[in-house]
Amino acid sequence: MALDAVETKKQENCSRLFFEAYIESGKKLTMEQLKKTYPEINTKWYNTFDMQATAMKDWLNNKKHKKGFDYSRDDGIMPILVKISSEYCGVRNKDSWNTMDIVMVKKTDEAKIQKEIENLCRTSNADNNLQNLNGLMRKFFKNGTLYGISLKDVTGKEAHIEVSNLEDPTEITGFQEVDPERFKMLKGSLRCNLEISDKFFDTGEAAAGLIIDGKGVNVQHRNFRYSQDRGVVQTDLTGKGAAAKLGKASAGRLTEFLADFGLEKPESPGKDPNIDMPGKWTEKNVKYWIKFYNDIKDDTVAGGKVDFGNVQCKVGKETRKGFKEVLEYAILQESNKVPNAAGRLSSKLVGLRWIQVYQLMDTMGILEKWISVLYYSAKKEGSSKNGVFIKIA
Image (tube, rainbow, N blue to C red; front, side):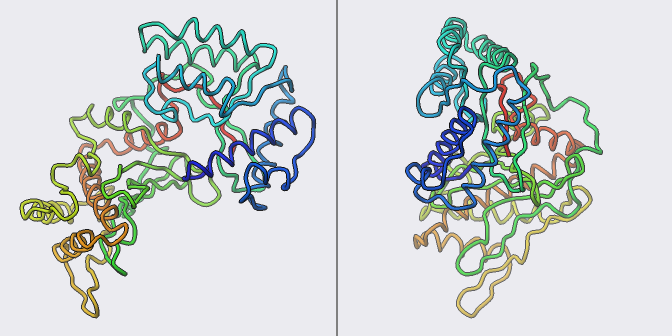
C-alpha cells in the first residue's frame, strides 16, 4: 500500500482493525479510533479502509462463513505462514510467493489448520513443501476458513475484489503461445530520458507503454531508492488512470524467461562489472558506456524509435550536448556526493541495458510473450509457486 515499510505497517493494521470491527460487529471504526494506530491518517486513507472492509463484508455475504474470524498481520497465523514459506519452502521474498498483507482465519479451525500445515510443509523437500502449502491454502480458501488478503490503494468510488490462483495455476512460460491482440507495446513508447537538468536525471527508469487486454499499462525498470548509490533495479507495472497498481514483477521469473531465449536479465548496478563505484570510475568503463549508447541509440522497438529525450546537460549557463557530456557530468555529480546523483546514474545505466534487451526481444519476435510474462509475474499469477489470495483494490 505504501513504499515506506513503517507507514505500510500502520495502514495494513488499520485495515485489519477495520475489517474485524465491521465484519464481526457491523461497526465502522472512526478516524479518531484509527489514529491510535496510524496518527498520520487522513480522509483519503480512512475512506480506503472503509471501502476495503465494505467490499470484503459484501463478498463474505455469499459465503458459508460470514464472520467468526481472527485477523492476523504481526501475530497469529500470518507470521507462521510466512515463516514456514521461508524456512521450509524456499521462498526468499514473501511477495514473490503471495502478496497477502493480512490473513483471516476461522477461529474454530485455526489450531487444526496450523497443525495440518506444519505436518505437511516441514519436510526436507522444499519444492514439495511449497506445493503442499499452496494446496492446503487453496483448500482452506474454498471451504471458507482461511483467506489471505492483498491490499491495494483504492482509486475509485468503491473497492473491488479479485481472487488469484484459486485453482492450481498452469505454468506460463516463454515458449507458450500468446494472443498478440492481448499483449502489445505502444509504438514509440520505449524511453530512457538522458537529459540532466537541475543537477539530476529527471528520473532513473527505462519505461514503456503497454496495452494489455485493451487497457493501458506502464512498465518501468528502475531503482526505487535513489538514496542507495547502487540500489537494486526492479521492474514495476502500473495501470493507467484509475486502474490499480499491478505490482513488481518477480526477478526470478524474468530471468527464467530471458534465459529460455539465450538472453540475460540486466544485473543490478552493484553487480554490473561496467558500473564503477562513485569516485572510482575508470576511463575504460566510461568509454564502454559511450560505445554502448552509440550502439543502441538508433535501433527501433515495436516499429518505433527509442525516446532518449534531449541528451544534454546544463552546467551553469552552458548547455552541453551528447551522451559523453551527460555521462561525465553525472559521474562528476556523484563524485561530489550530490544527494541521489549516484542512485539515479546507476539506475539510468541499467535502464540502457534494458533498452538493449527490448531491442533484442523485438528482433527475436518475442515481445508479446515477454509482456504476458511481465503481466502475470506482476500479478503473482501463472506460476505453480504462487499462492492463493484475494486482492482488494
